[in-house]
Amino acid sequence: MAELIKNPNAMDKAKEEIIQIMKGKSTIDEDDIDHMMYLRAIIKEALRLHPPAPLSIPHESMEDTMIKNYKIPACTRIILNIWSIGRNTNYWESPDLFLPERFIDNSLDYKGQDFQFIPFGGGRRICPGMQFAIIDAQLALANLILHFEWKLPSGLEDMDLSESPGITTPMKPKLLVVATPSKPMKDLK
Image 1 (cartoon, rainbow, N blue to C red):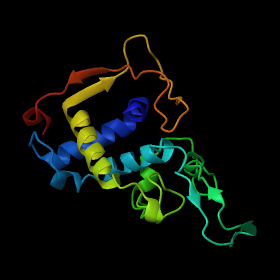
Image 2 (cartoon, rainbow, N blue to C red; image 1 turned 90 degrees about the horizontal axis):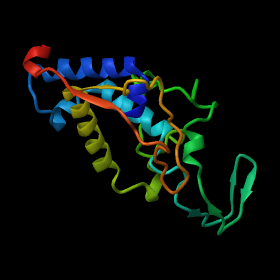
Image 3 (cartoon, rainbow, N blue to C red; image 1 turned 90 degrees about the vertical axis):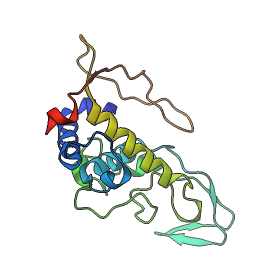
């Protein structure tokens, strides 16, 4: 939500998409979410910039392995920096910018097969709650965008998106925004 408030054009595009798909309905369900491509791109971009956990759970190599001229001996503990992978300039153009469009017409997914985008980890150790988290985030975000207008409080020009260190990385400052109810759906057609 903070990234959308900081990037009002993305918020406007998401709201426009949601209104078009809802066609006057006031309740968003999972079938509606399946058609919201831009909303899904927003979720992916937010996960790229702000993964649920910046570091993976520890993995251990089972046997001696070579990866790009690096020898990894058996029983070596490996921790992946997921936050850094999501901002790697080898994979991402303008990696520090919030650009949901990078996921439109792009087959990259968070299911652990595309190693430049692994917000939930990958392989056998992928987060078991991933599907629930994605559906829950999509439904919540779509409803928040549809039913409210969002802006910074009067006197605030910008917001600080810095993160607190830890196992998870919540925003360091509290998110302070003003939510004003949107017009009813019948008036938004």
